[in-house]
Amino acid sequence: MRLLISDANILIDMESGALMETLFRLPMQFGIPDLLYYEEIEPGSPELEALGLQIMEIRSDFVAYALQLPGRYNHQLPARNGAKPSHNDYLALALAKQEDCTLLTGDTNLRLVADSEQVAVMGTIGLLRAMIEHQLLTVDAAFIALDRMKSGKRRLPWLEAERILNALR
Image (cartoon, rainbow, N blue to C red):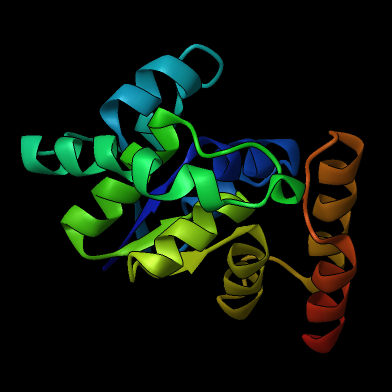
């Protein structure tokens, strides 16, 4: 089964869209760096481990890798893309690299770094598409989830999301 490593914003998107249980019904495994989980996710969503979220350790060589990424990339990341990736964001990228798997993120700057580091990336829209393709969600239900995310002040490329979902009808 395919392993995907998530940053915090993807899980927040899923929660905002009321899709958390649907996410874990996908034929995929989901992991997250232990530090990111304990600092950002567990306080508000401690049930995710029971749903199947894997809390994973990052080997010391990949922690060192994560620590050098801000110095290599932060100065060149465009401010228009939002905040620079946090330490925990870089840990998620490092874990995806360690496990040789896809990184789940909606953070534009983290996507740019992942691309430069040759780590595959998927976002919320890709997960919605997968839910539809695996018949866990209808297109109409995906639009309802998108509306919830929008009401929850989540940041997505709304027009692109609508275009992709409409193409799946």
